Amino acid sequence: MNLFQLFKNIRPFVKPYKWLVFITLTLTLIGSFMAQVNAIVLDRTVDAVNALVGVPDFAWSKAAKILTIISIVLLGKELLSALITFAQNYFGERMRIFVSKDLAQSVIEKVLTFKMAFFSAGDNETGKLQTRIDQGVSSLSRTVQNFFIDMLPLFTSAILALILMFAANVYVGLVALCIVPVYFFITYRQALRLKGWRRDMRNYREAKSHGIMSIIESINVIKSFNRERIEGDKQLEIQNQVTDNQMKTRKVSFYYNGLKSFVKQVGTVLVIILTAYLVLIEYPGMTIGKIMYHVMLFSNVVAPITQLQRIFDDMNDALIYAEGFFSILNSDKDIEPSGEYKSEKVVGNFKLSHVDFTYPNGKKALHDINMEIESGKITAFVGLSGAGKSTIVNLLDKFYDPDCGSITLDGVELKDYNTHFLRENIGIVLQKNHIFDGSIEENILYGNPTATHEQVVDAAKKAYIYDQIMELPKQFDSKAEELSGGQQQRIAIARMFLKNPPIIFLDEPTASLDAIATEQIKNSIDAIKQNRTVIIISHSISQIIDADVVYALKDGHVAQSGDPDEVYTKGGIYKDIIDASARSLNIEKIARTIENG
Ligand code: ADP
Image 1 (cartoon, rainbow, N blue to C red):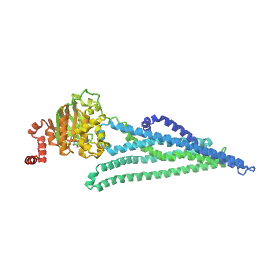
Image 2: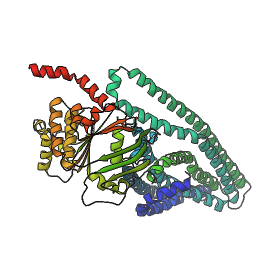
Image 3: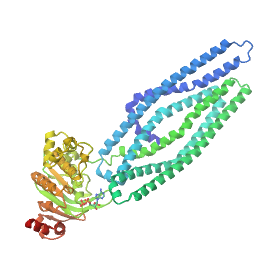
Image 4: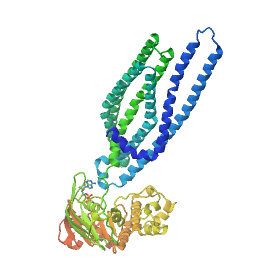
């Protein structure tokens, strides 16, 4: 991304604050004029004082008059400058804060529209995406601030100072002008050398936050295996790379900064020598006052250039981070597709014909899947881990699109459905359900934000969690994150009951529940299957054999399908799984124990 593209991209975010821009720019211009006052006053003072010294009719009253005028002008100017700087900083900062808010909000809203494939891509893992967004927002809003608060005033002041120098004496003006490109050239070389490293720095920062995030997420595993050292070493490697990179960057910066400081001093020396020479040869208009005048103006000319490196660094950061940031904000290829179709009523009959699917990382998870899933029946997906069961559910919820083949719901292609409408009609309960930061009530309400408290209570009862909630000190206002895994699972089930959709996907819904809760939930699910499509993925033999239809999956293929008892009698993967489950449950012994009891 170049500077022009950067500004083009930022423009829409600055536009709503054009009044702030106007005020800041006006203040900038006034501020730039004020910055030259010191040089002009000094010029006049030196010459006026010089004219008084050694004159026979020297009068203190004249000197006092000059000093009073100087004091009033300088103090008045400082007062005004302070006011202008305050207003300029205030309005500039206001703009930065507002632009920063708008940038952050837009990117969050954009990311929410993206399809699942975006989030499962390696580049967008939690910490990395967050760093890219954070760094993007802060460096872009810094650019806005740099431009309006730092760069513009400094450069306007520099140009004005240069004009004044030229107006006073063309030769001195030319010397000042010659130094500027040298300075620019050095800064440009510096920026060029640092560019690659700064880009690497971005990647390291992303890797660092991702590393920290994954440590926090898996802290119990790390501790239980005593792997703190290994994790620490992994981080040390990243830290070492970051440190090396930082040291290299700093070294180059110090070298170039020294060079620039030297060039600036050379410029000042040249201005002093030239002006002193012009005074000595009594060049018209050149007085001792002009020596001070030019030196001060020259320092105004180079002032922005001394700041240039910082601004350049920030700009370079902005260019690098803006690439990542705007690639998210302007990306339309990742937006979740949606059709227009909304039916009067969803019945819930799915048909999959010759469906293949490959995950974004290239893993082909489904091969030539053909299925008919009917409403009013419980359909169970059976298979070993990794067989593709959850992947089918992902496709039915339109989280991903199939590579080929067709998926229809009630005879209409799934891709033609309005995605929001479709998901309003589907309820999902996963093995590990997400509980949001908030109360139990808020978490259940996620299923239907407009539901009443009575409906929430009803849903909690159906999910057999009501009694346990009422035992808590704050009941429905208790924090949901403090509940146990099994209780959270039932909150997720209550959420689904409250949503009350015609299609229900249950992916190992009772995996983390105790036996009694499992039985209760099974009864609830059996009770709501009427006039609904229920797809259940389960390793629980009791849930599988109660299904109306089973699909046994193996390596992304449908190996067997039909009535559970019929499929069992045919042998094959389904029978193998059921037999293994029965053996693992030690059913014969359980039966004997129960009989004897
Ligand atoms: P199951 O639900 O039967 O245990 P899945 O449908 O989760 O199996 O997975 C099927 C295959 O797809 C597995 O090989 C798994 O590694 C792969 N897979 C699942 N999710 C993803 C993903 N987000 N990205 C890439 N591959 C995935």
